[in-house]
Image 1: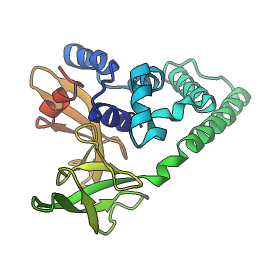
Image 2: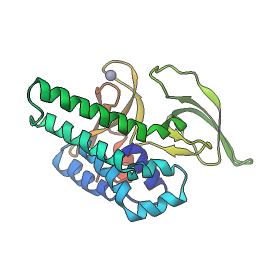
Image 3: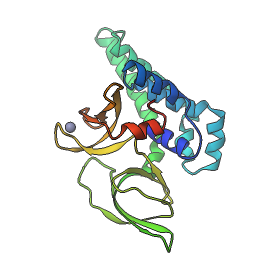
Image 4: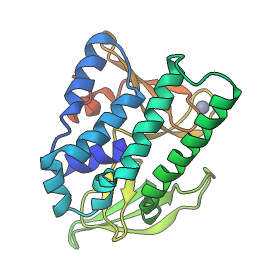
Length: 239
Ligand SMILES: [Zn+2]
C-alpha cells in the first residue's frame, strides 16, 4: 500500500516528505527500511493537506483516502504496536494473555483487510511486451495479471494506453485502464536463492559500493542490485 501511495502521489507531482528522512537514514547510517517507515508513509498520505487536495483530482482516490476511516487507522496502529511489542520482547506473557491478544489482532487484521477490500477492483500487472504506435498515439501492451497465488498466469494481449508504457515493469491497473508505474519501489525479478519470480522492494543500501539489497515480499529472500540505485535516487528514496 505504501509503495502504491508513493507512486501515485509522486507520479502526480506531489511529494511524500517522509522519504527525505528515509533517504538520509538509508544512505548515511546503513539502517534499512522497516515496517514503521511504510506506516509513516501511509500516515503522511492520510494527514497531508496537499495530498488531500490531490486526492480530489485524481482517480484511485480510495487508495489515498482509505485510512480516513477511523476503524482502519486504529486497526493498523494496533497491529503495528503489537508487532513492535513482539519484536522488542514486550509482548503478552502466558497462555491466556497470549490467546486474548491473538484474538484482538485477528479482529484488527480482518478490519484492516475489509478497509482495503477496494483493491480487488485493481490489478497488479507485469508488462511483458509493448507496441507503440506514434501515428495513432497509442501504446498497446501485453501483460500478466498477478492476482492470486499462482505465479504462472497467462499473458493477456488487450492492454491499451495513451501514455508511455515500460516493458518488464510492474503497474497497478485501474478500473478504467489507468496505469500507475510501481518501479522502482517494486520490481519483479527472478530470485537467485530459490529461482522463483518474486516481487522485490528496497531493504537496505550500502553507500560505499552503491549496492542495494532488495528483499522479496513473498518469501523474504534477498538479492543485490546496483542498477536500481539511480532510479531510487530519482524518486527520493536514496540520496
Ligand atoms: Zn527466493
